[in-house]
Image (cartoon, rainbow, N blue to C red; front, side, top):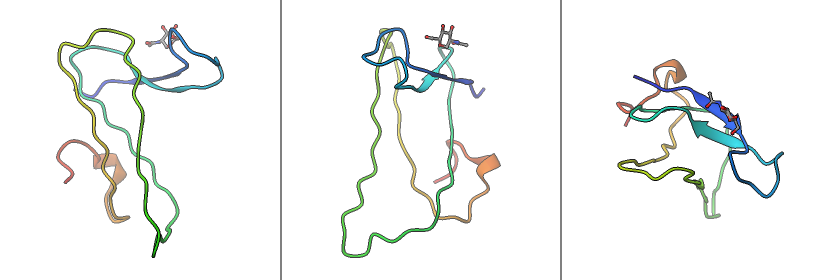
Length: 82
Ligand SMILES: *[C@@H]1O[C@H](CO)[C@@H](O)[C@H](O)[C@H]1NC(C)=O
């Protein structure tokens, strides 16, 4: 059920080297994860964000991010991971 991502600047952009990941097919679920080194935001605000560009009209869609502890199996990452 998982769709494949396309790493592209998209159909329209200000800078063709400014790329992001794009879904490739309608009616699919997409998931991706990345591991990053341990860090601390002690006494500082943690900002965790993403931006979305819609090139086509959406009938139905949504997106969310999950910030997880380091003990998950990335190969099993998906909608069921809390
Ligand atoms: C990936 O993006 C490029 C640029 O928009 C596009 O030409 C190509 O068809 C896309 N590939 C897929 C599999 O969607």
